[in-house]
Length: 147
Image (cartoon, rainbow, N blue to C red; front, side):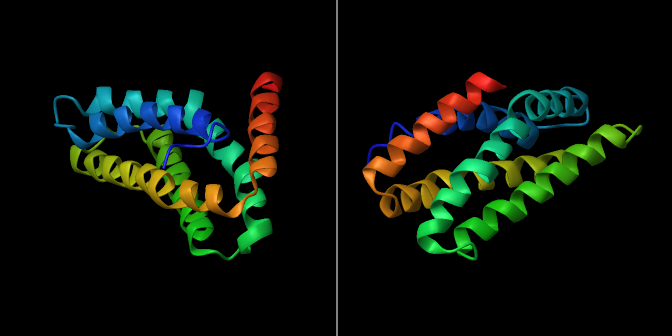
């Protein structure tokens, strides 16, 4: 199924996230600092805003049709909390980033993005009527223009 144009901006942001996840998954002791920096830069400039849009726009729209306790929503929110915590831990830590921890973070980030693309987004596209998807897409565009 082709991605709804309403969700296309989020899918495009996922491409950047997958690139960072790949860098993290390939981290070695020699590349750990660069991988850490790439993740923190991505999170500060794109990831945190992406999470906010999902939490404030996408998930409430979906919850109107499936309920706030839908497993896809719960997983996304738990992942967001964990990824935010890890970003905060990396910012607060003065020690060099551990390559094993970064590789695990990369797997977590990739798994989160794959879940959204393969589970959440198709469920949203199925649950929301076309008119509501269009309004959601307009909300993403308006929100992006106001930040």
